[in-house]
Image (cartoon, rainbow over all chains, first blue to last red; front, side):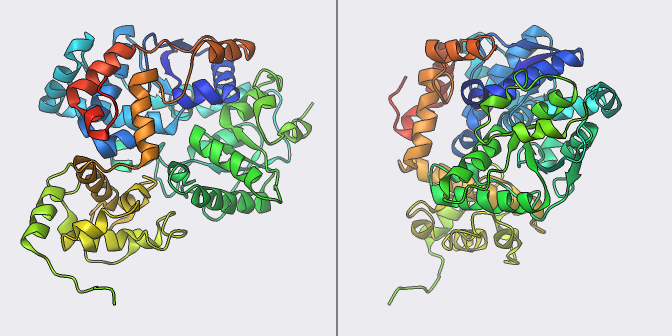
Length: 286
Length: 171
């Protein structure tokens, strides 16, 4: 299996642990992730609220790079997944819109053709690799580790665009957590937004929304696992904004998978997590 | 006393028509004010003035000034919970996007969002990923980040005119 790997600005610049573990886990599973030359920001989720054509064109330029490579795209960011998926769908379905966007792209020398698909890393794992293969690869499974999954919004919503799992009852992260031997715990507010996008508008709202979930997960579990860089940053940083830091480890889902597959803490970049996550290592079978 | 009477004027109707002509905002008039959007909104829980149901109602009445004042339209987190759960498929998130686009036409944009948008043609990313960052990536065992084709990004954003509208320098 081979994919064009769209990492996205935030993971590239701020979350080496996510990127490192995603690459290593892919390697373990025999998946080749190929970097995309000339790729850039996906456009951000803000762009489509300001100007749809710009949002479509910026995303389409990145998709066109994967088309030239002849590979489907895998992303590790919920926001990038949403932008690229929505654009891919809209331009595949609407030839008039596609022509308009290709006209915007003319000077770049790139054109959207509609020949590839876009998937988030976790969706690729579940749909293309399969849970059985992942379970089989977990040679050093967790035991007695309780993990609260946080999905974030744009992996699933808007559901009529993303066409993945039910946003009110998603499964993929729970499935992946269970594949590592850990227990995936349910908790109130599991599918709620982290409010990360308003961090730059009303910072306190984000920290309050973040802390509410951190404290809830702490009641039910030992750690939180996410698949979105922005949610990750929210849940990690909000803990340092209060006097009583709850110190709930927040991990990227491939970090959890990687450890269970026998990768070392260093290989999954566990030392880059701001809340110490080393307690997870004590819950692995020898 | 604050004037709270609500009435639609000719200008208000024009504004509403402009709003409803924006992608995704055409079902505004289907709103029957059930309030599902507000009760499920993560921002409304914390910010008393951000009420998606009120936003829909004010939009129906063409209350442009009240909608575009302060940072109201910039408070939406874009989580799509209201989009998913609206029994009438009004999609208040899309109404908010349409309001942002109208605000932008009038030169209004939140400074944080302006700064993000104007960073894209400058860096190709929303954050600096230069020599130093790539060195750090190397230390973490990661390959250098792709060098974004900045000229292509500038060409796109110049052609759509977005930079002029957000008040960023025209690349």
